[in-house]
Image 1 (cartoon, rainbow, N blue to C red):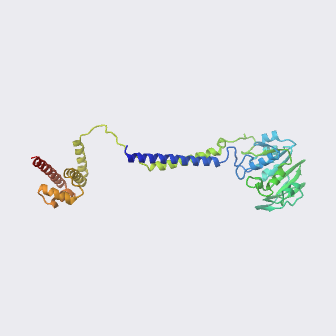
Image 2 (image 1 turned 90 degrees about the vertical axis):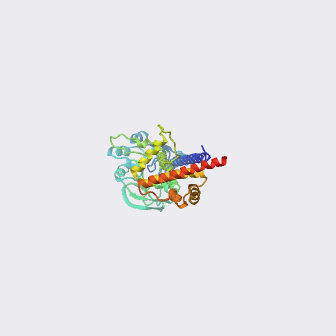
Image 3 (image 1 turned 45 degrees about the vertical axis):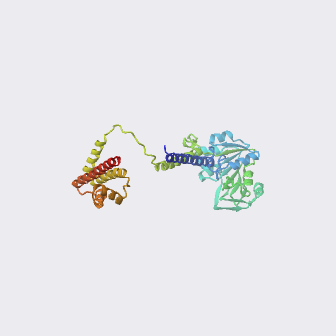
Amino acid sequence: MSGASAVRGRRGAKGAVLFVLVVAVLVGLAVFFSDDESASDKPLDPQGWRKGGGHALAELLREQGVELRVVRTVPEAKAAATDDTLLFVTNGSYITGESSLSQVAALPGDRVVLDGAYSQMRVLAPGIDYGSHRLVQEQRKPGCGWSGAQRAGPVEIGGWAYTAPDVVDSCYDGAVLRYRQGGRLVSVVGDSSFMSNAGIAAPGAAALALNLLGTRHTVVWLAPQVSQTDGAKAGPDLMSLVPDRIWWAARALAVAVVLTGLWQARRLGPVVVERLPVVVRASETSEGLGKLYQARRARDRAAAALRGAALARLSKRLAVPARSQDTMAAVLAVWSQRSPQEIKTILYGPDPDDDAALVALAHELDILENGTAEHAVLEGKVRGV
């Protein structure tokens, strides 16, 4: 391998290594910054690390000594709830069907219900009525006598305002409502964004969330990830079992494969010389090439091939560059006793118009070469004498 080829090979290897390293870094960053495999996209999921998740609130409750029992299905909630527990219902829209909703509504103990669809709310928090709805979240004062809200102070909150019979406390312009129903204390929250990972750090948000959920030592956190329907088997589907980081890595690798294809498609690589399966004599090759030229009437290419071969041999024999037309014509004119212009016409002239002119050109080139060879032989003999 020549020096230039070796340098190109080393550069190609370095480029390939650098490309692989860049792809590896991109895949690593995608996996690192993607959510953990236990994370969820559902709002206020205790294992959700994203902005709308509830992981920060879950950790705060544990730090306050609250025991969390995270359940995903209605049967799990029935097994975990007791008279001494607090039921915290998030993602209520995933509980569909009168039977499932009735089973959750019949669970013992106090409960905190986040805003959901009316069909779910009328069962989980019976007796409530919807008031005004505030699209814009703004800081609101407690406006009630509940000590939990008074300690939390003003909180940025919006959403629905609720009313209900037997109201205990209506705070933050009705966005947080506490009332008695069937011997239990029900708390309804019209805007739960202050409980999320993105909103828990706002002034008063953490205190209000802890005061709502920290009234009992044990909290049963019902956060279904798939629909809990009547008579249907609850559980994740096959695709939901694949962790998010795997999808991120697969996407990054797909992009890497496409980029690699585009990168390699531009590199044609070195020319590979293959050994011919059959050795063909030069005369047969020349004859076959001549017949191809004749069949295609390529007199221009045939003339160029004849002149190029003759010039190459004459240049080597006379030590005159083939491109130096005047010098080549002057030297040959002395040896052949012809005019320089005639020599230039033979070697560098126009293409022949017909086959007869092509044959005549080949004959003239042969005469020039043979005459030059004979002159060189005679000159060598004279010098030898």
